[in-house]
Image (cartoon, rainbow, N blue to C red):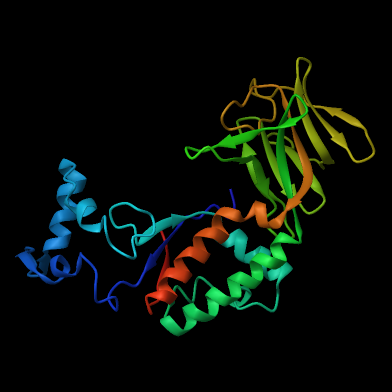
Length: 278
């Protein structure tokens, strides 16, 4: 599926002079066979990975730049970044973030970070007053929710990826489901023929059907014993996939929040950050 690349966002910690990990990152513990020095921090990370040693976590516990409140919490995975930047280019084309090319620029110095932190605040305002197209999951005529450990929740959906060509959001042995700017498309893996554009897909006791904007019901045949499926957690449960618009601030909340907190901490610490593909 398109645009599912995961990135790691990480503060550039070297300019941050007061940090608990600094002595361990400067102390050589031994040498690799090729002569490369191994620093104590690398050894500590190795012990954590192999034996569950918690020395890294204990060292990071009281660090002022431990954003994620865990071992090496000065970095984190960030999801949906490429789609977010495409959405920025659509909704806030004159913003600094709209000009970011991740293939050419993945390291941002302190000065650039200050600019991006201010830019993200403006983007948040625009996103909160704009809508974005998604394919949203429903069950029993209510949005299907995703629940988190802190008690919060949000609707489950697939965002439009801001591309002209349809983007595949789900697939199985029989069918592929795509999202485009006009609706939902279902393609058979065994038929190259044309496809309808649907306002929603419905799964119930009678099988799966698509409903067009004109209200036409188009039933699907089971192929390889599979109907079109869109719910990754419960693929064969009754429900609907609807083409709707949601508030862009909510659609991209996780990505936007992650970028805002990292750039804010980086700015306060007078440093920058990096974005690298995992």
